[in-house]
Image (cartoon, rainbow, N blue to C red; front, side, top):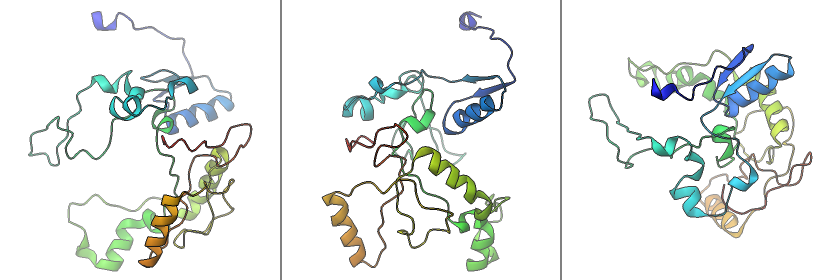
Length: 230
């Protein structure tokens, strides 16, 4: 029982939320606004501006935001159930997470795209285009219980709340929108222009990706400084 020596019994609340990432944090906020008492349990501290440093070793190699928990764990992976799990980083598809209030939202790259309408009906669309045998018999791929149109107002609300930078209509394949992005797209660099021009020569359709990085000051929150650490 020594492991439980630091356990504390907290006062009862209406709702307890485990994990205060993008979903849990937003849920805690909305429930508290509605008048409920809420407790949030998170495996890391509250991260402040001082915790973000312009240091590649700290951020990328040592995963400084994972010091509270994940850096001390031994993650393993295996592609199939009949293969022995290994600790090798080779083949891993994701990097280590952060631990702190905000979860992945405090260290992700900020790309903030919407799903396309076909994403909500992958099974139906795949079978219609490639035939009923296109998916394996034991595939768990299925359609969502709602479509893009039902979710669109919520996409709009989140984009307005976060202050997404983007250019509506720039993506020729994007689904219908109820309004423009709240902020203009982030400024381009010479590298962006070079790659975009090469893509256009190949017949592709480059466009400024919507980003949860403010291109200018909004609601008292500062705009992007283009430090490059996202």
